[in-house]
Length: 217
Image (cartoon, rainbow, N blue to C red; front, side, top):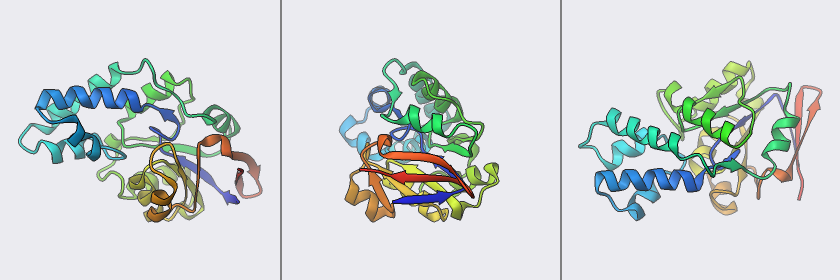
């Protein structure tokens, strides 16, 4: 399977960087802070902006205070953040081509995790603090495509969550699901064209109209 596109738009956590243990530790600390069971919190945070999860979970607490507290803890939890297999090769192949990151984390946190994983920081990085509406709304991906000067309908999104897949589809992009988060059937049901186990199954090369992405098994 091959996609001929103008640009690639990547989610970050779970797609380019493996930050799940760090994310879990930070949210567990927050759960203890606000008196909620981690088993309850853990099912309500994947693929979403932290502020949206916090507002839903603790509507009686000050959102800005809790969001700032959690982000500071997440910035402290970087010791075991690592690149998803194939991420280095993928981003090296994209050097000089059009690509961006659109993430549910803040710009500052996304940059910190990319750097902790030894991955390059793109010129275009759309974080939760740059959009009015987070995933599954298409705004993050539409904004990323716009900054790249690319037609969203000619962009390929890489995503590991159903929330992110729905955002990419709503933006008019083709989407490849990465099974580091949700499974194949769940990602396809959300609208992914196909899925890969990790980024090692993708090959990127310059194309006549931008770049070509091939999925290999």
